Image (cartoon, rainbow, N blue to C red; front, top):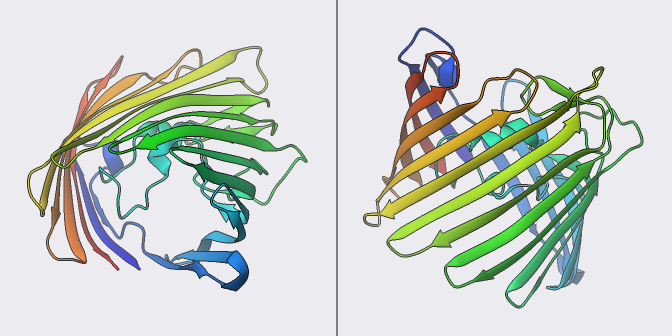
Length: 290
């Protein structure tokens, strides 16, 4: 169970970082487990005014080297999407996630771990939560190496869906959209951090233009004690031809574990825009996670 109470404040009278508002974050109820004969399942509900299913799958574990999952789940396309919203470094994920990747896809996922190496692959409808489909698929792949405090890997995907809305950018892909990137993560006792790069190329629908979206971020954290973490993130997002504005965002974060189940997050944000005025804001998150 996850319950969140959020607040956002923009220093300008605009909608930066959600404008000026209170919210309830992402209230979730999650059921998952393992069954006899190596089967597994998950059902995750988002409990808003209109409850919705965000994860629904069954799977089978042939071995640690090969597991098969069928249903709706997060695709392995970018490392920043992997954690639960209860365990993200910052209140909001890095912007490259929303700009290039759907948070859920429906299809088949294949995954396995072979010593320190691991792989993740999938074939999906490529239309996110939408049940619409044009009989073309999204293909995803990830290979990585994890040992001790280090995790490094590569992602590559191809979405053949036509007239696909590209994340939250307002752009539409004509089809055959490629997404690729790489990541590096360090998890030490005192310091931790992640760096990731993601890029997507596609033809803009109803034009002769080829767009390229580039996103990257770097997060460095300091684990001061069992209760307090302090973080800083640099977050870049840019576009080639569509006219969407390029920007860099600096985020300062403080995460405090108040009890075993209750925590708070506070973020300060400053965005440097290429053309328009720079923007600044503050966010807070008060959560219960069981």
